[in-house]
Length: 85
Length: 485
Image 1 (cartoon, each protein chain N blue to C red):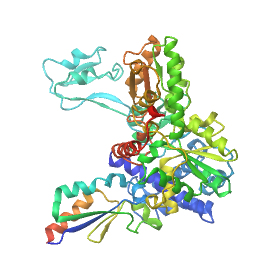
Image 2 (tube, one colour):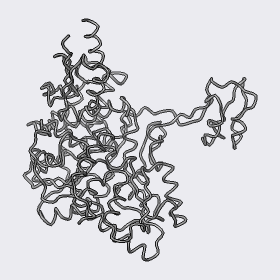
Image 3 (cartoon, chains in turn red, cyan):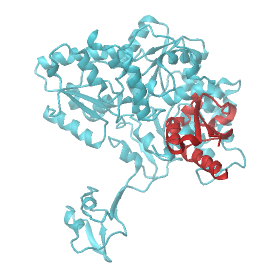
Image 4 (cartoon, rainbow over the protein chains, first blue to last red):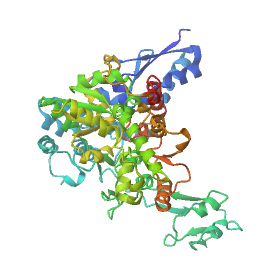
């Protein structure tokens, strides 16, 4: 099975709007899901322009953008995907 | 930090970003007026309060504070657009850094100790035995506390084997180390500015985001826009609070429109050496102890609450003071702005002609968002002056004491640091006893920092303390030591 791709935005906007809590998220997810996922820290997902900055921080799971991202939210999407397949 | 506090911080930051974008637009006043409507447009969800109108009213108040005004300045009839114009006309910013949004304040129930239904009506009655004020009696098979007699000492809580007695708190009152914030007759919180040391602990503690900073962000951007030479002097804690290096930060400031940026760590080296000399002289004269003097909230505390300890406070000036002196010398025509992790520095600069404005980390973060500046793509621009390892660690608890030790040229055993890591009701008591007895059992060099963890834990920070500590320590590891200079 192809690993689920998790992208975590560590750009300035996401960082200032609460992304500080996401810095360790990659490690925590990797510990829990191991080879089932692939984690990448990215600079900007290009979704925070205009008014959308208020929904930062962002993450992306297999292309699905998650606003106001948190460990719980990202985990919920991963679980959903794992259970579907 | 709990999620509800993050939500209030996000709201404040969002408003700052919108304010800055309004300022950059060609219709500042009108776009400011629209902020509450842009954030809660017709028919939108109401995430926090009772209705959309209350949400907008509070967002309006937050915008007023973001423009630098106090809630006392608001008659509720003045349009936000008029406040925006008034902000632009302001020549000097207001002295008090904090205000409380009474409309955002929940009016928490007053703090009290009370017996819950977990009370087992036991035979031994340890609560009654523990109480020294005869405040506890038996009513309907349960212990009951007479609020008029209760002194909230907590002895009954500690004595109850069932943990059946609890104390409710008012978060802002509990957080304030000096009793400067309290509920007024209307139930909402008010700050007594004669007591307030501007530490901002109430700002971080309130889960409703009622205590609020009065920002100078528009004042600073207006200075830049007018074409003046504006120079940023950033606190060493900043390295821990943005995802980039110090050298990239210099470029980021230039991208914002600053003429240049200086590390306040440069001044910290001067503070450390001056303080080491001061300490040597004091020891020669037989002094029992000396306290540090770089924390602005501590200096306010000394002025307002403990003038008796003043003779023991080092005469060394703060890192900001020396940095601003250097900047003034190199750029006599410049407007200087301190980039601060906390609110108290606003008070420090009031009597310093060399510092014109103070922006905090949250406000700087909002500027970066509004201008779309990615700090980690900024160029590395090396500083002319290379700050020491110890100066870079100044914002860590214990860091100031270590820097004085590194600058110390006498016998190493002569310095015995005693670190006061955070001002709270307990450490305030301790400091009072040092002042009263003229002695400090814990050591002779007393480092005082108002925030637990040091300036990296300042109340206007962006990062978690743990991650900020790591980044600041990594940067410090690349510096050379004051010992070798």
